[in-house]
Image 1 (cartoon, one colour):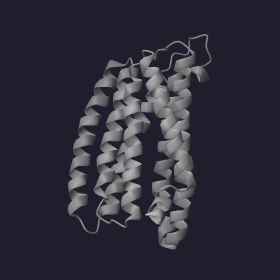
Image 2 (cartoon, helix red, strand yellow):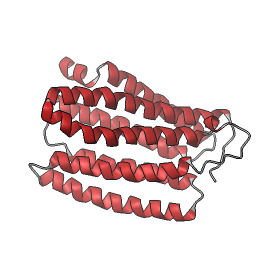
Image 3 (cartoon, one colour):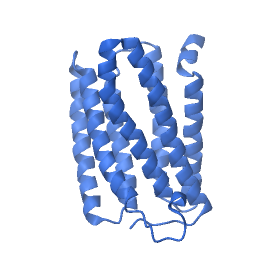
Length: 229
C-alpha cells in the first residue's frame, strides 16, 4: 500500500490536486455569489479529481483494461465545457451549433468507448482520435468566445473572467493537439524518451489550464459580472 500511494501521489500530483481543490473552492464561492455558471466548472473540477485518482490507482495496480474510461471522460469534459460556453455566448447560432456538437461528440465517444472495450489492437489510436476531435471542437468554440468578449468596457480585458477561461482552454488544447501529433514520432524513436517528454509537457499544460481558469474565477469574486457580446 505505501508503494501504491507513493505512485499515485508524487510531487506533481500533490500540487495538481491542490490546484484543482483551490479551483473547486473558488468556483463554489463564485456560484454562491450568484455566478451560477460556475457550478458547471465546480462539477468539472470535482469530477476531474475523481477521474485522476481512479486512473492513477488503476495504473499503479497495472490494470490494463481501463482505457475506455478516457473516452467516457472526454465526452463528459467536452459536454461540460460546451455548456459553459452556451451559458456565456450571446450568439444564438453558435449556441445551437455547440449544442449539436455536444450531442454528436457524446455519441461518437460512446461508440469509441464500445470499440475500445472490445478492441485489442487499436485502443491507443481510437483514444487519440477521440481526443483530437474534442480538441478541434473546443478550439473553435473558445476562439469564438475569446474574440467576442465585450471590448467596450472601461475595465481592461485581462480582468475579464472569460478572457482567462478562454486562454486556459486554448493554450491547453492547442498543446494537446501538438503533443498528440509529436508523441507517435518520438515513440518510434524511443518509448521511454517519448513518455518522459509527454509528461514534461502535459504536466505544465494541466497546471496552466486550472490556474488560468482560477484567475478568471477570482476576477468574478473581485469585480462585477461582465458580459460577452
